[in-house]
Amino acid sequence: MRRTVFNEDQEAFRETIRDFIAAEVVPVYDQWLEAGQAPREFYYKLGELGIFGIEVPEEFGGAGEHSFKFQAIIAEESTRAGVSFGGSSVHVGLCLPYLQAYATDEQKKRWLPKFVTGEMMFAIAMTEPGTGSDLAGMKTTAKLSEDGSHYVLNGAKTFITGGVHADRVIVCARTSPLNPEDRRAGISLFVVDTKSEGYAVGRKLEKLGLKTSDTAELSFTDVKVPVEDLLGEEGKGFSYLGQNLPQERLAIAMGAYAQAAAAINFAKEYVRDRTVFGKPVAAFQNTKFVLADCKADVDAMEAVVDRALDAHDAGELTAADAASAKLFCTEKAAEVIDKCLQLHGGYGYMMEYPIARLYADNRVNRIYGGTSEVMRTIVAKSMGL
Image 1: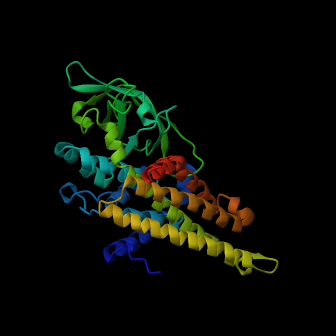
Image 2: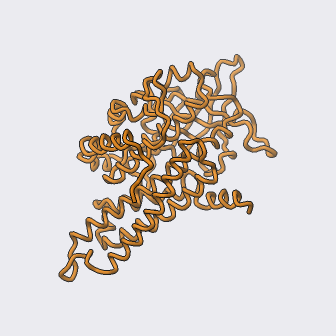
Image 3: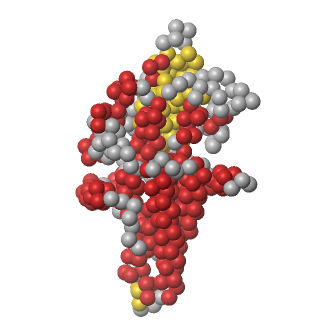
């Protein structure tokens, strides 16, 4: 079936991204894997290409587009090539919506121009050791100074993607004590300068997959955050976090779909070239049937993702819609990728093959952005159950 979700400009953008990946990423990707992160200089190249500014208003150096479909194309093309853009997806996909929605004009003038060029990379710090998905249980605090000029930040965060290279981090912290009757109250967001005294990057965490995405532990010891760097209103941070979840979950769903589609391509290439018992693996009926099943699943994922992309651009993607898309696509993608790895035989277990890296990268999709169990709870609630 002909895919109609992208317009001509977006398909032209796809060609640009595909050429960029072939020239700037594929030749050096093995070096990134060995280093455990994409180099900081790469983000300047993304800035030069205009990747970071697609959805930023023109007055701040961006293109002023309002469609999330450009990000979907980046996910599809990078996964198709068996590579990633490191932690930069958090910079645009997670952090930009908060800056667009809650930053003042003065803050946007300070941050967005350098956001666009890659000179100021952003990350977001929500999760804490011991709390996991329970964001309301966070213990990091930010207390206003007696003269009202700054907040004093203390605490720790973990699993922070982009945390090693970040120049600014959106930190969630308690500005008032935990209220057992309303655990979500009293949380605020701060855009913290990573050069601040008392700010420290701990371990760069070693993950099962997503090897080129720098993920770190952060700690804050009496970090002074100017009141001018409070994002939005004090005490409303938790509600802000919830409003971006549909887009975040859509991004994970479309990434999972892209991974499943790429897995089929990797498997097709392998079974055509690999000979067993005197004939290509692709010649066996089992191979054909397995890949046919995978293709049907990917077609279904594509339909779900495309419908969700249209709904998101129209401002109609609900939390339940996004949860359903994430649940379906991440669960199905795991099945498809597992089958495609099996068709590789022993070589599918070797990290030099893209399918092995894809298998490891995919696993986190059912965890971050809300686990599959949380997604099921949201969908069931939307059904009145």
